[in-house]
Amino acid sequence: MKLLALSDRESPLVYSPYIKRRFNDIDLAFGCGDLSYFYLEYIISTLDIPLYFVRGNHAAAVEYGVAGQRTAPWGAINLHKRVIRDRKTGLLLAGIEGSLRYNKGDHQYSQFKMWRMILGLVPRLILNRIIYGRSLDIFITHAPPLGIHDQNDLPHRGIHAFKWFDKIFQPTVHLHGHIHLYQPGMVRKTILGKTQIINVFGYQVLKLENPKIK
Image (cartoon, rainbow, N blue to C red; front, side):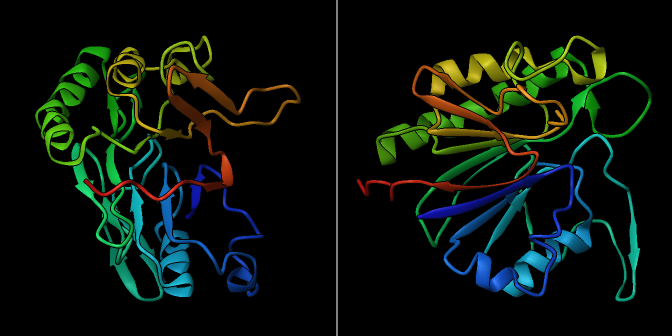
């Protein structure tokens, strides 16, 4: 199957009259934060596929448009602090929004709070292991794990709990945003154990094997 993952920067190749021609074989889409609601809604409506998302640290509380105001993208599924099995593909999904706290903005959390949210996912992941033979297929976050694709300044520092999570539960893919790839040589993909960690800044198209049905 093919997945479309996006974060932080709206691409003219996606927000385009030719989106259906370029991405006609996409099965699922994932928004990893700091994208406008109308952009995500455009993907849902034109490609007619499910879209799962988490909010970034710059997410607006309310977005206004010609169709009125909304507090979330219409038709999208918020994965924050949730574990879900996608009905169309059978993929096991989970997500955590936001970044480290660096001022009084929304969707910012301490390392301790991130740990609490991660540990809140554990019971369902154990149940997934029992029922489906695996804990998780795709983990989406806005911030990266600590020491992987992150930076030294507080706003862009990685999350310790995410690195632990990837080591213990070994999702097939961990998709994140938050770190802008404006300089040559910046790493986009890293392997940690059995997990491929990908910075999807802008957008990335991924191929994934269909999950085994237990």
